[in-house]
Structure formats: C-alpha cells, structure tokens
Image (tube, rainbow, N blue to C red; front, side, top):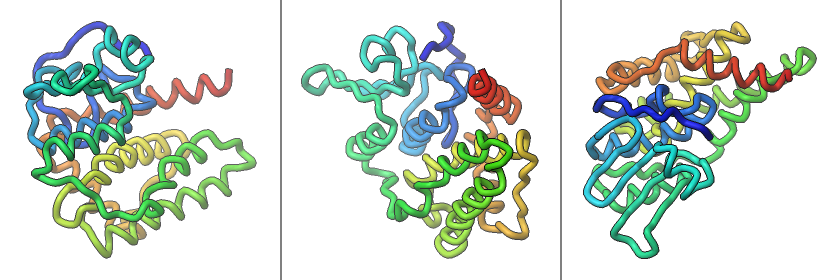
Amino acid sequence: MALPSHTCAPARINKSVACMKCVQLGSSSQQGMALSTWQHLLLPRTSCMQESHDNLCLTFRACRLQEKSGGKVPLIHNSELKNDFWLADSDEIVKFLEQQHPQPSMVSNVPADVVGGFFGAFRGLLFAKPEEADEKKTVFVQELQKVEDYLAENGPYFGGDRLDATDASMAPKMYHALTALGHFKGLQLDGAKFPAVENYRQLLKDQPAWKNTDYGAEAIIKGWARHLSQQLN
C-alpha cells in the first residue's frame, strides 16, 4: 500500500480514527483501532506517520511498510524484544499494547457476534448490485440493531462508562459506514429508532481528540468513491 512520503506536524492521535493525510481510506478503520489504543493508553504522538514511546514505535512510514510487513499498515516495532520484533496485524497490535501497558485497561468483554458482522454488512450494502440492495440493507440494519441493543443495555460505550478495544475498533468503522451509506445509498441513521447508537456517535464526537484530528466526511466519501470506481472497472 503506497503512502505519501511527507510527514505531518506533531498533533494528538484521534481516539478512534487515523490521520487520512497519511493512510489509505479503505483500511483506515483497522489503522484507527491500533491508533485509538495508543491514544487511550496516553502514549505520546510525534507525528501522524509514526508514534513513539520508549522502545515502542507505531509507524506508517513507507520505507518500513514494504520491508517489514509487505506493505501492511499499521506496523509496530519493539527494539528491546528478540529478533527485532515487528507486528502488522491491527488486532494483534491492540493485544500487544494491552500487555505492555495494562493501565488504563482496554480489555473488552463484548461478544463477538454483537459487532463481528457490522463492517461486512456495510460493505455488502455499499457494493450491492441494484437487485441485491433490499436484501443487503436488511442485513445491515440487523447488524446495526445488534449494536443498538448492546449499547442500550450496557453503554453508553461498548466498555460501559469507559472506552475499550471494541470502541477502538467500532468507532472508525461506524464513522465510515454511516458516512458512506448516507452519501452513496441515501441511508441516514434514524435517531428515534437507534437512540443508543446516536448517543454513542455524539459522545465520540465530543471527545477532544476526535475534534482535533477528525479528517471529515469528505475524505471518507472520496476514499470509498475510489473503491466503488475500482469495482466498476
């Protein structure tokens, strides 16, 4: 995955989204998961291409991507561990950061079936052929209802009154899904039907880190427009 060669000025990492000046839009939800964990653990930011703390380094630098991970992002490095430790999987990075920095904890107890189908259902609807649209919309709404039911009973966050690893994963996915579906499919979130989800979104937007680094709906739309165009070609 090719990334820009520039670096950005130092700034705080968003709790739940990655800087879109430096990452590809299509995979930013996964990058956001690792970045949000880094932020929640209060590890410092040096630039939106690389985050450093002691001997840990979370990087988006192109020179490292191909060499160490075959182009996958994000990529974490610990120089103290044997064999010059590198890790490229977002889920595994979150687990690793939790082990290295257990406080504040981001351990999640959310059942996998609550959120596991959400992003796939979003993509299914976004890329659906006209004859598939109704069926795919039904599937997406069902997955959104699972999220609504869980947040209504256990929220306001997936971690209750704190952010956890599921929040780190779902916040950027939800941001992408609802933005893209609203633009390309005319599907708007009905706050009356999904009040817990609507409240969740507003709580996230009120986070200072979100306000400081939100890359905006326009960037999300441009990214998914590119994916839709590629599918048609």
